[in-house]
Length: 81
Image 1 (spheres, rainbow, N blue to C red):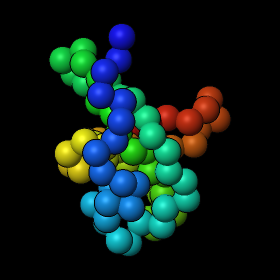
Image 2 (cartoon, rainbow, N blue to C red):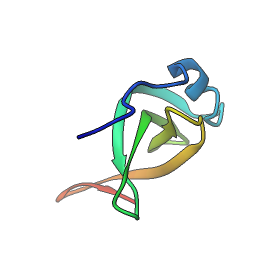
Image 3 (cartoon, helix red, strand yellow):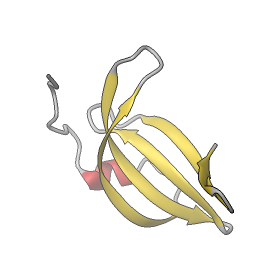
């Protein structure tokens, strides 16, 4: 069972946390795992900066940036770092 799936901040408030130089291409709600095997409700933003693609996760409750991943296209598929 998942509790607390209602964001306390708006997508605009979450977007305001992100570096203004990143061009946001898409946004959506997402649940991500933590290292301690819990889950966090976040806003997921996909964006670009200097030809690099990123996934940025902002906590939908606290407005804190939770995770930033760099997307890398390879012959075998997309890798995240």
